[in-house]
Amino acid sequence: MAARRSRRSKSLAVQTMELGVAVPQVIAHRVARMAIAGASPSARDRKELRRMGSEKVAAFNEAWSSMALEAFRANQRLTLSFMHAALGIFGKGMAPVRRRAVANAKRLGRVKRR
Image 1 (cartoon, rainbow, N blue to C red):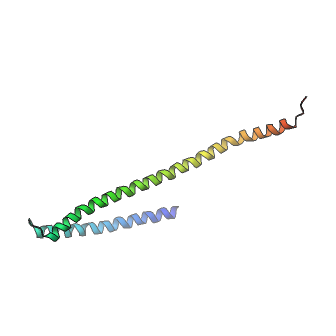
Image 2: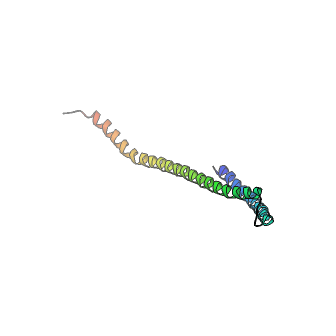
Image 3: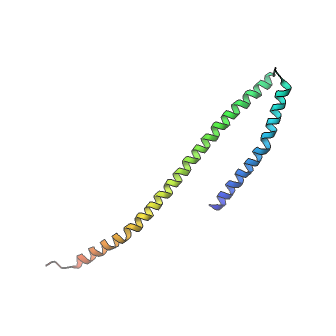
């Protein structure tokens, strides 16, 4: 499990680094295009601006959906771990009661009735 967590952390670190490099490049490109286009952007520039907006909305929705699904899965794992723990606790509590009940049944089964 520790190795998996480490790989996940490295992956998140790499993703963050890539994002840190890509975002300034994209912003610089788009701001330059907007500055060059001025008050009357070309059809190509308008298409890029629309795409910029729709990509942000799509990425935001996908990110929230992914996080919600992962939170749901984490809650399932947590609930299952509590259930397994509860079964272990109940088992420990039942053991002495069962041991005595079984012993009493054996003992009483050997007693002759008068």
